[in-house]
Length: 164
Image 1 (cartoon, helix red, strand yellow):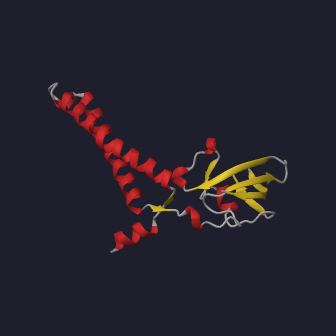
Image 2: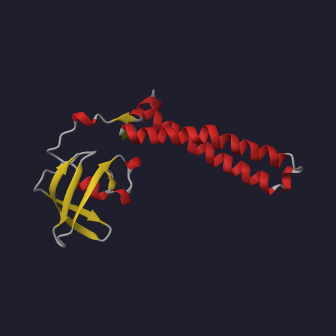
Image 3: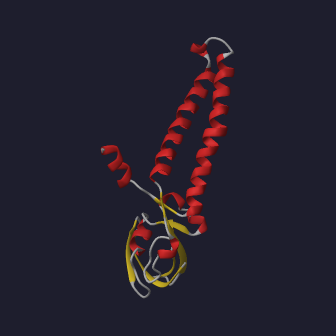
């Protein structure tokens, strides 16, 4: 029972595209990378004495890391929840919204799309809802000011526009 409660509490939200990307990575790891590492282990084992076989040790270490990554991805996929984009409200900044904001001090404008943590890609303008800026913008309406604590201090951003 505790395990189920833990999974429910740790659910992460994804777009259809984000979840597919995660599932594709999991399939790649299981169906391509796992057999590759098994082959490397078999080849290293065939070379003789395992106590002084650096290739064998490296392959076993790589296998351990791969299995850990597979296990973590399986947990995320198992607890993943899809976001129904058709039911999202555009009057406030929410996940999957594009928010055009202006730094009140510098006047610089930037547009961010708020996404789930695993889909964040700063270069593409996608920031996590759990990032400091993402948290500060959540729930804000056009015209409101978000006071956001960042490593360099406090910043103020005015929400200029919210779109999909």
